[in-house]
Image (cartoon, rainbow, N blue to C red; front, top):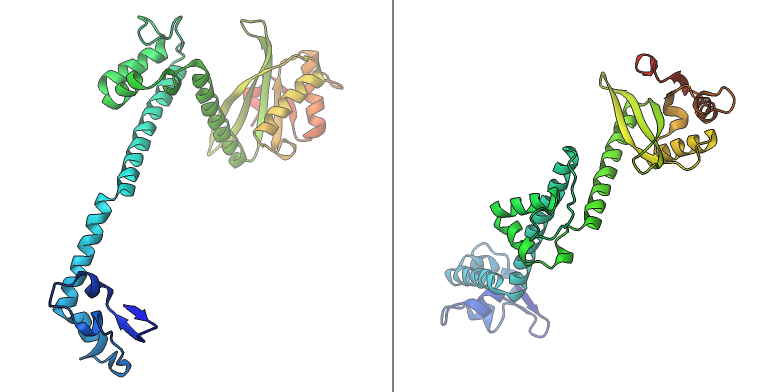
Length: 290
């Protein structure tokens, strides 16, 4: 219903705009209805008009008009196209992520000497994407038609996606450790193939009756003093937002003086900050750590 202040009467919007010629009730389309005493009578006024055939047909025509306009409007067509593009793009980026995850889980080298799509050996990752594209028209079309900077297959994008997945894994491990309530840390230092000194760090915890030893990463370390190594270990725990002062109950390292020294070793430095962190030599760690 529409109310006119000038006429002090109500009009029926559906009947004014969509009623068939000659069937409309003039009281609700031309002159307006203002007999307020009879407005809510069961056999008259607004109630009777709502039940009338002319009003019912006008409402049906109005609804049909709205449905027809909605399906043909430019805005809705653009919205549908945008939704379709988003769905296709997510499907494509999902294939990129899963291809990277496949090569990472199976420890396959991802890059080739020449990663051009016309190369006979573009590397495991690119060749895997090309193989997926042969069996999926959407992925194959994007690999062929998209500009190179929009295919999400270059080495920078690979590293970024792998870093995101690594962060997700660390967050999951941290969540498990917080649920466990207590954990121990195991660490050792070694050099990689580029002669870079690095710490390998593992968290050991008991969750739902099962002991887990979760590797949380290699940490490049330039300072191999006890202070430097302990700082790197604690920084890694802080990055994972773990409250080591109350939750860290064990440490497992080798017997080198830098690690196990009673006064200035890594174990003692960490124990000063996490008083529950008992040090156990790494050969005994699986037996005595929680």
